[in-house]
Image 1 (tube, rainbow, N blue to C red):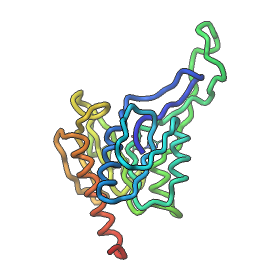
Image 2 (cartoon, rainbow, N blue to C red; image 1 turned 120 degrees about the vertical axis):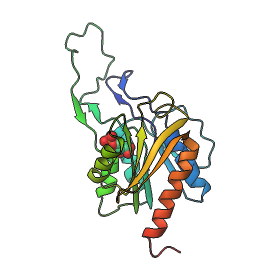
Image 3 (tube, rainbow, N blue to C red; image 1 turned 90 degrees about the horizontal axis):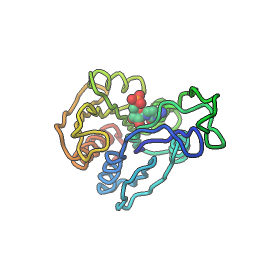
Image 4 (cartoon, rainbow, N blue to C red; image 1 turned 180 degrees about the horizontal axis):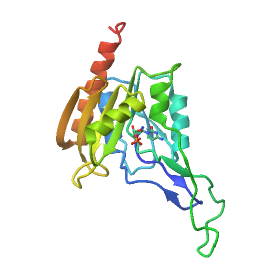
Length: 214
Ligand code: C5P
C-alpha cells in the first residue's frame, strides 16, 4: 500500500495528509524489477506510474482495506501507506454551509488497521508483513513497539522530523528493523535507493524463512 487516504466530511472536503506515495511506489518498482509480481494499492497521489505493475487506486482507508483483502493471498505485504487513523462518523450528503450552526465539531471513529489485520491474520497471513513507522522522536523504540503490536516481521522506521527528507520528498532517512531487533540504518538517501535495500532485505528474509523455496 502507498500514499495517503482521504476521509470525506462532505462531497468536497476531506481529512488527509501530505504523503506523496513515492516510497511505496519505489518499493513496488524495485520488487517488480527483481521479478516479483507486484500490486500497488494506492491512495490519491500525483505519482506518474511508468512501471509495469498492477495498480489499484483507492480513496478512503475503508476502500484500501477492502482492496487489500481482495488481493490476498500474497507472499509479501508491504504497507507504506499513510492511512488516516480516524474518519468522520458522518459524511454529509450535501456541502456543509458556512452558516450551518450545528457544524461546530466533528465526531470521529477509528479506521481498521490494515497492517495489523495482515500481521494477525491466521488464515491468510502473508509470509512477510512489513509495516512503516513515521516518527519524529524515539524512532527505534516506537518502531519496535509498533512491530510487536501489529505482529509485523519487519518495520521500516522513517525519520519525518527533518524538512529535507521523509513525507513528500524524494529522499528518506530510514532504519529497517526485524523482530529480533536487528537493524540497518540508512542515512539520507534517494527513496529509490532505499526501496532497493528494503526489497533485498524482504526477499532475503522470504528465502531464509521458506525452507521449501528453491
Ligand atoms: O500506528 P501507525 O499509523 O503509526 O502505523 C503505521 C503503519 O501502520 C504503516 O505501515 C501503515 O501503513 C499502517 N497502517 C495501516 N492501517 C491503518 C493505520 C496504519 O495499515 N489504519
